[in-house]
Length: 346
Image (cartoon, rainbow, N blue to C red; front, side, top):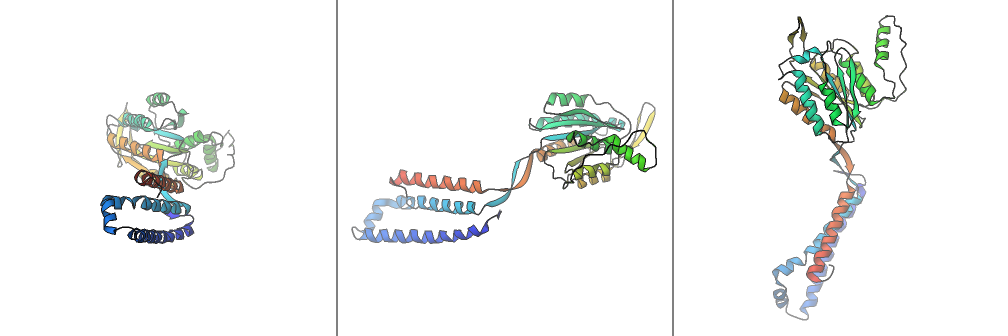
């Protein structure tokens, strides 16, 4: 714990002085009592319990003063508070490799079930959007608080070929910032033009913005789940830089086999491999985290962890009000006990 005004802590040195004054007052009362009666008779009349009681209200009042002085020094501590996160984009891989059964019953169904459980854990005020991606990326559901619409969108996933992880990040950013002029077509046009390819479309300039510190945008985050490596589309690290410059965290979740395996379907086969290195780089670049889920249970735990991370956050917060509240409670308790026991305040 730190203090914004530590110079006020010197006032705590007054507490021993107050204790000394209290002791002097007690001795003075004892001397006055001896003038009129035997001290032993007074102690016997008061009893041991009464002797202890008489000190409790002053001690509580002294603690109240100490709490007030600490509050005046403006203490600051790291505390866990409800997050300001208002929008979460789930970018989910629907490429053909998601039909693999190494995650039971298969990768896609396990991802769908985990995503639905994740929605149930989130506070109702948090908006969630769905982006589905394979060879391309599209918004399956605009951000909404309607959980039924989100579940319907998840249930409608259709498997497709190829994997464009970079496109998923760009479309997610465009969904979070609809007025920022983020266009996937413009980015792809720029890449192709740099390679010397002729295009019919003109690249539209993005709106001016000031780059932010990675992870500094508190109102939205992206969770990207994929089981393969990028085969087409925008470079995912380029897309991750776009997210980092806007302060948006991109949490990445890898599902399936790290070493890779061959998956066949309807006469065709393909080799799929989880590109953990790129997923970790995306998460690191945006000040987020990477999670690996090798089983359906692992995937469920990942979403539970993400739910807790995105709904609460640790912040350095001034807690002067807390100390002031404790001081007030101690002062009231001190006065109340004094009235009940001795019919006077202190």
